[in-house]
Length: 265
Ligand code: MG
Ligand code: MG
Image 1 (tube, rainbow, N blue to C red):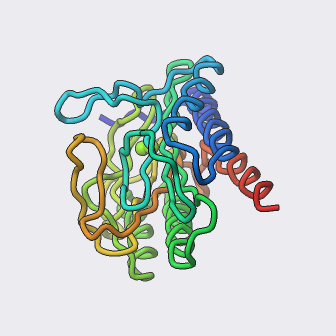
Image 2: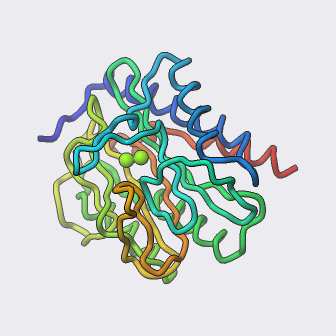
C-alpha cells in the first residue's frame, strides 16, 4: 500500500528529516581517530531526545524478532549497513557510515552519511564521491511521470560505470508515519520499469556501494552486514518527496558538510 503525502504531511516529514541532518552534524563534530561508535550513539540518542523526538532505530526488530540495541547504525569499513555501535576506537583511515532515524510529531526521518576518519586513501575518497553522486543522480529521476526503475537505473549505472559493486539485498523504501513503507526502492533496475512516480510520494533513496564485489553476508550478531571480499562500502541516504520537475529533498547534508569543512581548516 503506497500512501501519497499531503503538503502538511511533507512538512512534518521535513522536520523529522532535518533533525536527522542536525544529529549527524553533531556527530561530525566529534568524529576523529580514537572516538568509539558507542560514544557517537550516546550523543545521537541524547540529541534526538532533547529535540522532542525518538530514535526510530532503537529496538527496531530484525527478521529474527531481535531488537536493535542502539539509536544509530554505525557501519565501519567493510560493514555495509546495520553495524551495532561498540567500544572499538575508530582509527585514522577508517570510514564510518552513520545511518540515523527519528520520529518527530508522528513522522519519520531517515538519512545516512559516510564519514572519513582522519585521512583516507584516494581510492576510498573516490568511492564516497561516486556513491554520493549516485544518490543525487537517483534523486534527479524522482519526478512526476518517471518510473521507479528510472531512479534505480541511474544509481546502478553511475556506480557500475566506475567499477563499484551495487548491493542487492538491501534497498530504499517509502517513508511516512512508518520508517519503512511501500514501495521498495532498489539501487539497481531498468529504465521505464516499475511504478509510476506520483506527486507526494515520499521515499528514502540509499545507495549501498562497495569498492569490490557486491556480495555481502550477515555477521553473527544478526545485524551487521559486511562485504564478502572485506573491501570497504559506502552508504548515503536522503529522504525525498516526488514533485513535478524536481524532487524536494527533505533531509539535508548541509549542516554535516559545514562541519566537515570547518574541521578541514
Ligand atoms: Mg537509513
Ligand atoms: Mg532507509
